[in-house]
Length: 281
Image 1 (cartoon, rainbow, N blue to C red):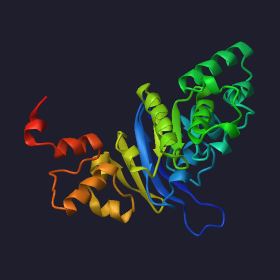
Image 2: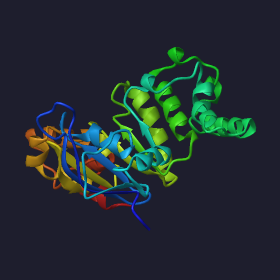
Image 3: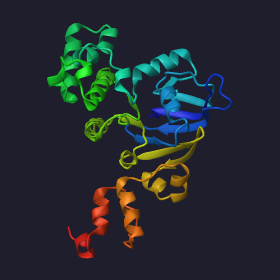
Image 4: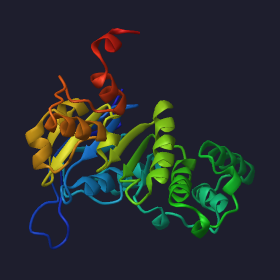
């Protein structure tokens, strides 16, 4: 089976810029993979997300295929937009309907689907994202998490092969982040391929792979524990650690040394448990 994303030496430069925003990125995602994309501000993460979604034209590439569509070709980019759903960090920039129901129906109406099919799909998406009770709610009356779930339901009302999330929880409070994270986890469980741009290191832990970028290039591609185990690279990219890792480091500073760096709260609890408890069922 062909990969969902098959990119080699992808380049992009903004008009008037002195250097490439993407200076030779290589990325492959297979069906059903969940890949996190991290890096400091200005590293090219959001630029890559836009190109993968077919929203901008690359300057060039050896290969630039997404869902089998050539991003170097105008028709290919247009086709990619149909197969790739992109969710940005500010949902207000994506919500266009006068209420939740209208927003979820918007893309389906543009496809010219029959009214009965639109109603059925809207009902399905409202239920899936726990929005049924909010279907007639105006966007300005929604919480941050509700707005982002509405935007996500609208993006996925049209069936997609790939979901690109560009820091979808960056503007949300903890409750809103939990809402969106739970929705994305359910989508991943259903086998949807996900590329997540994030600065939340706790989100990275759940990924199958993590891709780290610096100055428009990829500098790491591997498992999350491999990234967080490279203290020099984490420090250089100003990434920080998941909460459990930060707590473990703080404990180490107080004399409690752990054999390995935990990346989850559950892992931290196990590492701190007495040896007899760790060996039990």
